[in-house]
Image (cartoon, rainbow, N blue to C red; front, top):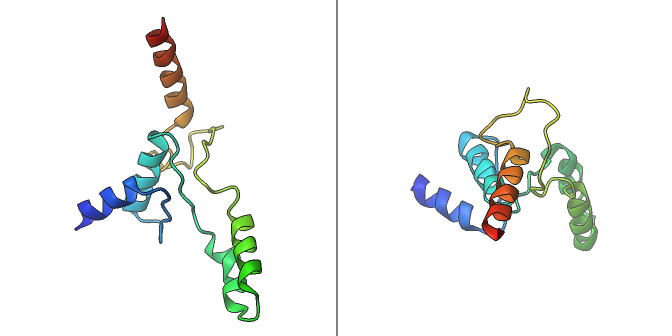
Length: 109
């Protein structure tokens, strides 16, 4: 069942991990390697006050949640240092991009 879950999550348009486990990290890394397919890393601490506010209109809630996650949509991240980054979650995209560009240039020639 875990293999089916992995395949479905990897092939989906958007991936939102429910927690920071190994499978979520592996999928995040796989999606980055595959061209930074969209994933959203939810910020539960920032979202909690809005979940607790039952009087907040749905349109406002949607706008707030989108704004909170604007910077966490699977964009390429350049690493300034290799410390503190899990290689399964952050597979050094700057190196992959350089390799892909070089390969494309060689194929065009």
